[in-house]
Amino acid sequence: MDAGNPGEFVVRRARAEDAGALIALDSLADDRRQAAVRRWCQEGSAVVAEGAAGPVGYCVVEYTFFEQGFVSMLMVAPAARGRGVGRSLLDAVAASCATPKLFTSTNVSNQPMQRLLQRAGWSPVGLLHGLDEGDPELFYLVTTA
Image 1 (cartoon, rainbow, N blue to C red):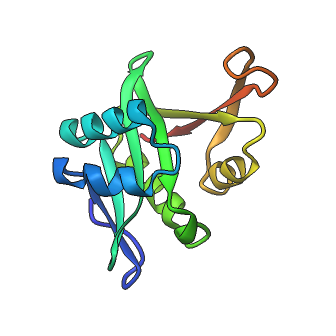
Image 2 (tube, rainbow, N blue to C red):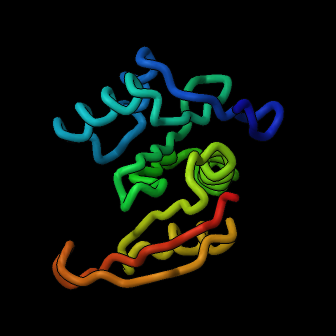
């Protein structure tokens, strides 16, 4: 699964020992998220983008969304944004997805994520109200087969 921009970062499957570094780069890592990051690394459901100084981002795919792949987390360190890290992570998980469809979602207010998904070839497929008051969730799909 090694992929990325030579000399900048490589994308690889996360290992249990990566959890601490991924938690450190995650700006929203409260206690619940920290436990999830440890679990994702242990289970092998996370991939990490790693530069010379360590991880710069990670992405998680789970298969609990109607038995299809679902990107439940994409996090890129603020200093690494705009360098292709998010796109490389999305491309890597799409290439290794075990189902023919891969979904994700983001809040309507998250314009940077929407632009990233559209540039990466994902299509908007639905809108869900009620998760975050006043900020609907927009769902996206990319076919992997």
